[in-house]
Image (cartoon, rainbow, N blue to C red; front, side):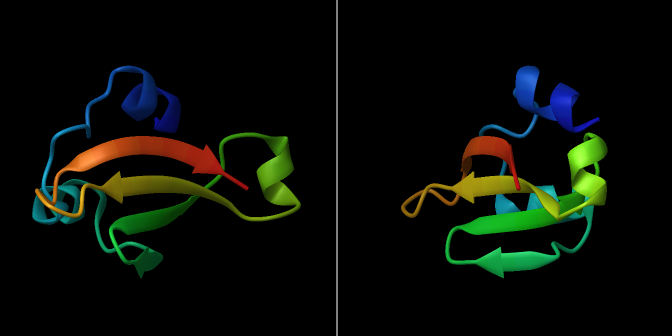
Length: 69
């Protein structure tokens, strides 16, 4: 699912409220970003991996989505 969200750019241009509606409450929300704990590969069983959703400060719209560990 995370790969599809990233490659198809489904979340790009969406507002924070739309992201919460689609993905639920984030596991971590910092300034201009939400992070959702995900398991995308075997390495994510050993340490935490996150789907990071980054928002533009001015417009509040999603500009970047990636997986980090």
